[in-house]
Image 1 (spheres, rainbow, N blue to C red):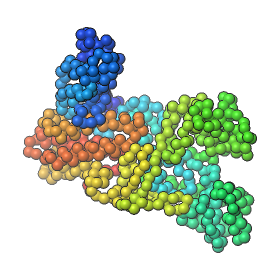
Image 2: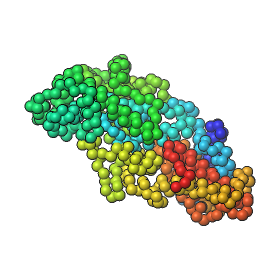
Image 3: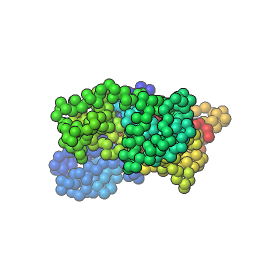
Image 4: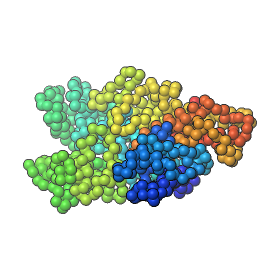
Length: 595
């Protein structure tokens, strides 16, 4: 079904229902005005989906707003509006509660959702609200200093789901990985590999705490040893002197980087480049196995080599937002809401990380993207004001930049927490996690909480086949529906969709009403999840839909003798099956037909 048809559904099921309720209330308010009980009809009447199912399907707070005019109390105003509402076949009942007006949609109106879902199939829930605007979403962008770990996995699942959701509501998403392949962290990686190489050469090495110490470095050092056995190797006394530099950690690290570069001279790039190439190749393989593809891999080194950082600084100079102090060049970022001014060029003439990041973000907008989304770790919260300030200084509306922070992940096996220290080499890789629980469980569990909340990932729960496992619970709903149709086939019966749609009036139970209501919420949920950047809305919805289906399954027989009722129930669960499938596709999760 074309997206335009789907957009018409969205208007038909959701917006039209809201507009219908608004028109009913406008009629009532006009009568109040004519009776001089209301000075003027508000220009906007807010109608929204009720958060609590006991409060109906839609609700309005218009009475609370009108009560502020001092004519009547909110409860009195709500009661009066309800008494003047015209009768509508779409509305089963209207109740005034504490100033709120709650609308219960009739079963006949809800049944319209079934033919819509079965007609639109995989496009059900999609719309064109994004109007084709281009969005660049940068997520993961892990430093290429080691394998991806379970914390990175949450960024990946979040980023992919967000891109899928934005596409679903009409935006055109573009997925980018920013390769941080320059700077201090890469020097630390090169040092760590060099020390492993020296160990391979027979040197006694006591590894400083500030170097990377994972076993993955041993294999990289072995590759270098096989290919380059002629590299300069300092004497033991010289090496001991280098490693025993008596300063605080940061100064010691700077000295170690300097001494390494002096010792190796033009051979330093061997450790840097081979380390980068091997780790990047591992990251690409890991992502491919996780089913993740990026539209672009953006190299910081290549970007800097093109002179983009210098161009950015010149632009900021031309706009009058930089100044010199203490031998360094500073951005007047406090003029744009930052807590302090930021150094762009250090006193040694080298650009800062901040300068690189500003240039990179301006480049994103220069490439024609309407909106730029950064998915960052929660430890980057201080990063946001400086980038927004720099964009405004450069003449770019900072509201076009969206920052989304993803909290940390704590891994558990039952009640036992597992260590997560990248530097010390004690961490669980994303590949290990996927091998243990599977790609689908990893993605679903990562997306069960909002991104700003800390997450506890329970390995035992993720592989359990019980209703306590939320993924299993939702997948089992899909499997149960498949089993109904398999049983139908065994009984040599045929599902007649046309008859089923014509017989929907036979669906009268409360559980059928609830299931229809939940199905009708799907398009609004998708739009809300996309526009508020909250993909966990999808997992919550799928769990609710599965719960409603399981309750229905346990209370009714589907393959009954009466053909009309049988096919009506089969049409309903077919709509549930399609909606479950659509939701899982947004999360890039597979859903089995048998378990």
